Length: 299
Image (tube, rainbow, N blue to C red; front, side, top):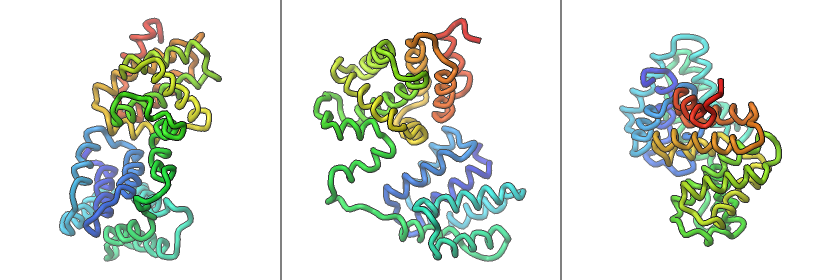
């Protein structure tokens, strides 16, 4: 919905990050997390937003984006959406600082129609308040973003099993994301059974052309992280970014296969897959199609 307030607000957030002409990976990841979870952002919207993330946004463009947002605000609830989204972005480090509180006041002034420029102000806060790590840091810290966004991949490195794989690193990262989502499903009805674990390993072998040993390493890492509490939203967003639409649709079949391997698929497993499909921005029709392929007698 590229005429929606949410989409225009998302572009404004990207413009804020480009305020000084430079965007760090940390900033982009924070923005992506926030934007990805805005209601109504479709897969097509996301592709266009990545165009804005690709190169600096000029002051003229930024002002135009700000004007678009202000024009799109039609109600008190619209104002609240803009206000809360901007506040969420600058409060990623916890309680707001006096400078951040000043920015909040400026946002409120802009929403009230007073002259101000929250775009450049927000950009300056992103630069000043988000700590960036140097390259010369311990391995654990180098893997911090994987710990947040691809926790199964982090676990594989933590267990020093990364060298056991013959696939390239990009493929391994994607398989780790798939393993995390598969583990999320089979964990819904309690401790996974041997049958469920075997089916999950079989799925990973099939899609990744892995050996049995490699697949079981991923299963172990995924179940380990799931038991600790898997960050569902981050994994879905990370998987969305590295896959095409058809691959995401096909992956639903594997999720249902994993669910079917239990002794009586539970309601929570189906609802978890439904939630994954929504996060991956797969249409409801594809969810139903995959469900009926594996469970032809389902309601």
